[in-house]
Amino acid sequence: MDDRLAVLLPVAAVWLAAGLVAEGLPGLDRARALRRRTGWLSALVLTGLALTAAVLAAGLQSAGDTTVDRAAAALGLAAVPAAVVAVCTVRRVRRLRSGAGAFAAAPGTPAPHGLRASAAHPLIALPLQATALAVLVAVLPAAGVDLLAAPGVAGPVITVAVLGVGAIGVRHALRHNRLAERAMPAAEPVSARPARALHV
Image (cartoon, rainbow, N blue to C red):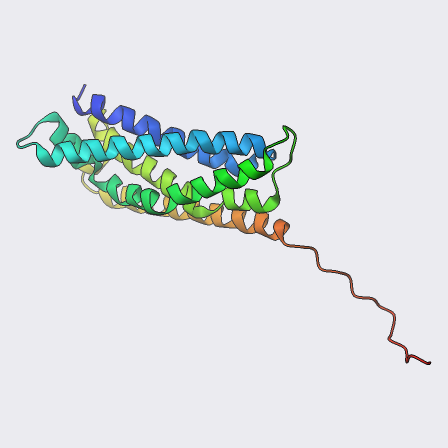
């Protein structure tokens, strides 16, 4: 077993858990459950960012070909989506948690469609799941499954990964739009009766 696996597995586990929790947020129909789950998500996201930053910083400070250096080099691909998580997702999750907290006073309060639409926003789940996929790409070679090393395989693997991330993004955008449409106020029906002249 590669020594990098001991460093990369905790990072991968946290990002995968964050991606799964974010995936289920829009399906929660109670405000209290949504608030509790966004609390879990905040903790997982901050832990994932801290672990990723710690490995990358340790790799930059270390000189030579140590285990941490190789783990940091493998995590280089995950740095970009993790930066998007730090810039966009953390703020959106914090706002979503405070919004759910405003409705969570009573246990059975339903979560409004607008709140669920915010939970389904692509900038919440997509960067988390893209980071989880990037960390998995780093874990596979450490586990002995190096798909990019075989000749003629790297191109198709990268293409499938890019198409997969694109498909995930489209699915989140469609779900967000569907919930946002439900949150729109219903249009008032227009009377079919013709207007009559007012006689005084």
